[in-house]
Length: 66
Image: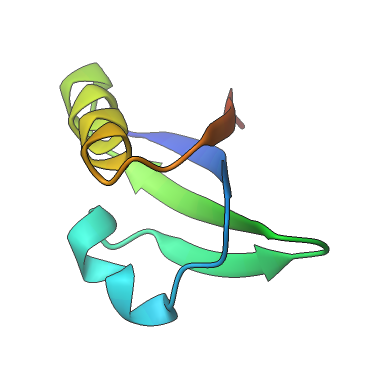
């Protein structure tokens, strides 16, 4: 069952990365942070997304299921 997630990372990503991050919406927050938000199909999709974040050597701040 799809779940809505908010994933906060350190740094500012260009919104053009949205498709590469499973179509999640990218929003810039105050400071040097980006929020990825949207629906993910299942836990496998979440883990795949977290692997992409790791592979880009981005700093993960938080993961919240809303």
